[in-house]
Length: 528
Image 1 (cartoon, rainbow, N blue to C red):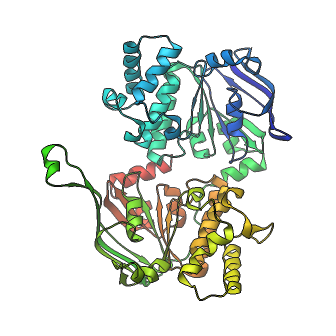
Image 2: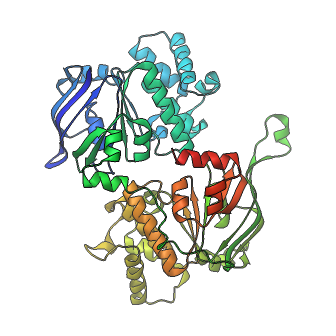
């Protein structure tokens, strides 16, 4: 039986039409994936199904069990939203109220939608938290969102969506911000709940691996148009549209001609022995009056990074990856031995200038790492003002243009005077790479450099990094949870779990015969 029937849906902001004639159907109990890159119109399409696109002109037909949703009044919409149709948003931290406990937020839905008394509402909320796999649901119900992990917050958002027993669940990139193992857990949870409750699911994503694991059918969107749809098995095996083929071909792969070859005995540019990072914590009770405790974030990490090589540091959130990166950059106090180009970090800021030039960083989210108040010229050229103040204006301009050309950004359309918000995600990441490269470093610390990007853009950025490494002999400390990215880029691998190194070795050895069960579980998840 057809649950949702969308015909010729069009959404426009002023004269610009961003969704153009989209049509698809969802059967009761079916899982449909809506796939495409950022800007393809996926999220706008999903929000239009709930009348949540403000200041837009929406045309076409959207029928839920024969009822025309686009003809509803606002009071009628309130009955549908969170009732017949519920939504799981991409970022749970922004979807949850930081001033309310998660139990109260779920109980509020039972009070409003089911008219249940307060005590019964909170009991139902606790039961629902248990049904989505949260341990100790009574304790979790009393927690605030910031006191939960990312995976736990996503489970809370799913519980809120399920509170009203919807017929259709819209899941907008529900796993983008999660580690690979948590992604699988959340998808398995959604599949289980979907079967138990018999509801339909519309999954919005750009990750084709998730589609392969989760959906029954897939619809592929490009620039506001559905270019292909059908059963997952058919579309993945026999894609008809060039855009679908491009998406399927965007999984990171190792290009032997592009990846710099491993050089035995290469000069070490980073040397670490028994790195340890601990944070002071307040002890409970009377003990806290006299001494402080500590939380160990990294313990006994040792490695060497040779010139022109890539060390992949992998692990889940909380494993200590970013702590290790910050220690290497001397942005956290640490214990142990750490040499950069043969020299230890000094406690005197001025003495560290040479090492700071030697080690640069590219962060995960280019939008938050680039100042919104600075132009491209100011952002990329800032390092030269610090490390090479003797350069003339024309010399700085020449170096600036060379750095931008190296990362594939051509000087056109007033490029230097533009601001970060005027660029796409992939272009912003190229700007971040150019900013790091302009001072001619030996080492780049890459902290999840592609996790915030679409699959096709991710492939482009990885190919850029491979080319730059081969041309310049750069060394990369690659922080990631994606084993596909490690397989495409790394020469050696360091596996972290709960702040400890559980396994390390050459990439070929780790991929072929991992010894530790945790490493094997990461590999198994990436191959699903």
